[in-house]
Image 1 (cartoon, rainbow, N blue to C red):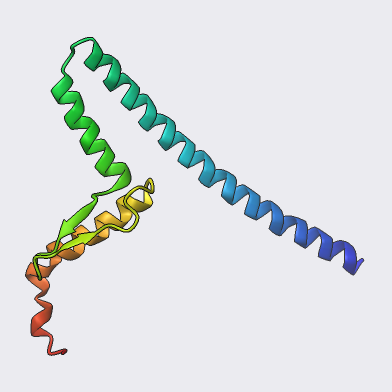
Image 2: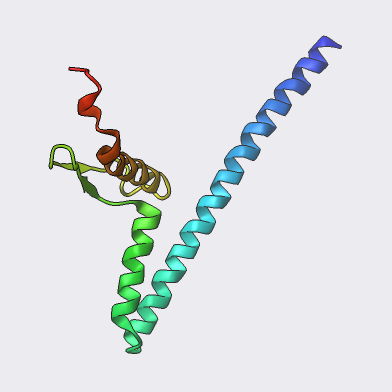
Length: 117
């Protein structure tokens, strides 16, 4: 009986891992296919002469939303900080969002006044 319960618990754990990874793959596939579809529509509209500049601008913004910024200039030091996850969909965007939030919050947090060396 114990062996049966152990086998059942193991099977449940395996199923949970498979379901979680399948869900992540589905989300990634939807985002990827949507982005490719958007790029295709932009290429078709550009080839037909419809609003090429507007579509390119939107494509640039969509690329930043999905992949994040390549780099951000630090307001504290003035140096450019590279986004290590730039070409990874969603994760690159999250890194970029965190870098931007940290950069923007520098003005009102003023960490140089905290007394740490």
